[in-house]
Image 1: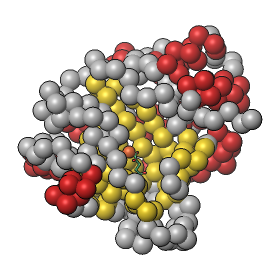
Image 2: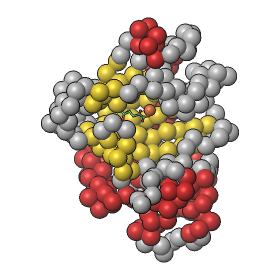
Image 3: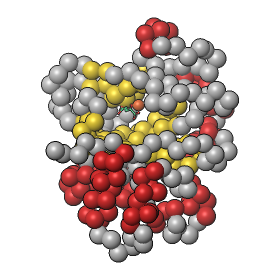
Image 4: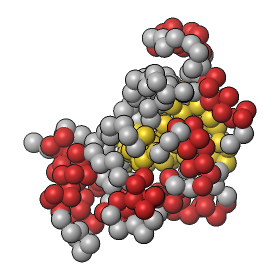
Amino acid sequence: MKKEDYQFFEKNGYLPLGKILDKNETETFIKVFDRDREETGYHWYDFGHHQSINCDALATSPEFDDLLRHPKVMEPISELMGGKTCFSEICIRHMKPYEGELHRGWHRDRAHLLEHPLRMDYIQLMVYLADVDETTHCFSISPESIDQDVLDTEAQLEHGGIQDLYGESGTAILFNVSVLHTATARKTNQERKSVQVYYGHQHQPYLSEDSIIPTRLWKDHTDSDVRDFYSVFNRKTREYIQRAGDDSDLPLEEVLELLVEIDYETGKRQRPD
Ligand SMILES: O=C(O)CCC(=O)C(=O)O
Ligand SMILES: [Fe+2]
């Protein structure tokens, strides 16, 4: 990674990677995304102001492993995080056309890890699988330097302003999830498709209960570095292993049924009454 890119991240808490996917890769992942919604749409659920999401995308669409460990992504992530990194969460997200007023819900996903050189506990990869510009929904961030105090929402927006991030399909952004950010929903007839992946430090606690780590990645993968990358389990993955045992012959529908049941128990989903 270029020195200027690292310095940009120090100053701003994020880094646009540009278009990381070539034409073929972009088309492939759009197809995978669309197939996921078509075939396992029943596993998606509504989230936030105007999104629907599937956080078990490694189970429903194994191809996303290739996207989240894409060399153009892993190289800068390793440098920015330092040390050994791990998979934490994947959510593939869909935003429909929208008639309402512009909407933002500023937040920080987690607290800063102050002993880290970039104050970063978890990093997120955002990959757009639709063209995103000032007329569509987008991801927005309020740039924050590692030298400045951590401010409350109002003070941070006043100090750092708002950066709306645009790019054609296949564009990626990395950001420290502790930096103030939001989805921006705009009045638009365009949909937004995105793949959002969190990575953590192997020695830190797991991030969330959102995503399953499939057996073929943490256990059966032939590369021990990949098995290590997928070795930080959340409760969801532990419960799944306990309940499913050897799942090599388990049909996907049964895997998903089990995951939904665990989501009810961890409070990730509301059990229908
Ligand atoms: O969907 C977006 O643009 C932002 C979502 C978000 O806040 C997040 O993934 O942490
Ligand atoms: Fe967030």
